[in-house]
Amino acid sequence: MAVFDRLPAELYLLILDKLSLFSDLCNCSMASFPQSISDQMQQVSKKWRRLSNDNVLWGRMLSYRCIAIPEASTHTSEPAMGRNKLAFSVWYTQYAGFTDSYTRMHRAFNRLEKWACKACPHVWQSLAPGLVWVSGESVPVRELLSVVSDSPDMRDFIMAHHIHDGQRRRQRFLEYGLFGSYECYGEVCSLSWLSSRMLQIVDMGRFRILVFAWCHVTRNYLGIVVGCPIAHTQRLLHHVIQLQPQSYRFVDKGLFGSFFVSYVDALSSGHHDVHDNVISLMPNTGPHTSTSYTRGIKITITAMFCADETPRYRVYRYQVTLELIDSVQLGYQCVQLESRHWLVHYANHEYVHANGAGVVGEFPVLSVERPFYRYCSRVEDDPAGLEVVGFEGQFTVVPGSLVDPKGPAIELPVPYIELPIPMEII
Image (cartoon, rainbow, N blue to C red):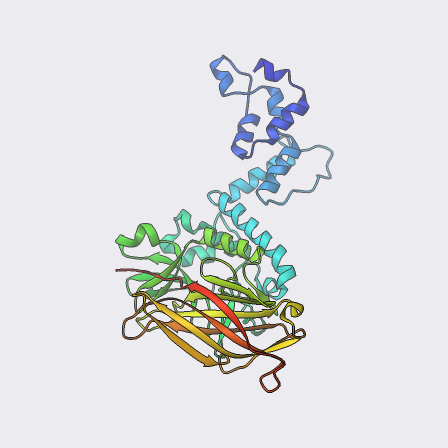
């Protein structure tokens, strides 16, 4: 300790600045003179104590925890412990048990705000003000979740509603679901984040699901398992899940905090396309996507399991995006889609061919002026029992137009895409 006492104040502050845990900083500032050599391992000197109360250090700790730094006092004298340390102490008391969730969710929402204000401001504008924090808990959410009110696994979810209480349900915001949208055969699915007043717990056979995101048109949803058979408690309780009620097939997305942080990271990294302020529900990259680039045309396909479907067989929706990237490489100013050809693979290694003119009844044109086209369709298990596992294929486009072709047809191959096979509860 004597060696450390001789260090200049600047070096002390550099050492203390490396303490990322506030408990370490607190230990350095809670000291009296050591009484023995053994006590020296537990106590610190007055110099340590004075320097560890430094406002700059505690200001950095406030920033690290996403806490607002208080303005300088107008009075001539500061509090004994320093205003930033005092602010930290008040925050830590107020959010006892929720401090880690507070920081984790505020960081996620800060990243979401930075991204959404540029990419899709309508989504950010749709978020409602947060619930008031009373006596260490967000009362409306805690009352609804009384069955899991003591679970640390639910604290990120509760904190999210404290920051923003879901999305406003005004008509002008319904198509801007925070958790993504898609359109399939004229039917639009938009997963909106529900406010605390609209949260509901529904029974799905042996499971109780807290639905927190919902599409009122397709009945697609995101939910948290708040009750399940004992055999599934360890791997599913409090997890975000999509469950197909008829078959008990499901997609597990992990605990809410991990799910939400990963989702925001994916948005910030550009892994979900945004068109006219609408977030695509299906990512444009990842294990269940396929991307090809041929003659200046980029094709991206992504697939998802449909937990909202009622049949006992598996149903998947897939989204296809065609984009003219380089007309010079293409050699033409525009092309029109003529046909599609799919090779659908099944689990027993059989496959079937599926051909058709155009897509979903349309023959879209890609041009320099309108280089983008997207559609959504579906693929499902064979009703006879064959389980679909993936597909590949090609599109055929004609330079110019179908009625006035400017050159020979061009084939655009689509690499194999593996479908996201859901887990099953036996």
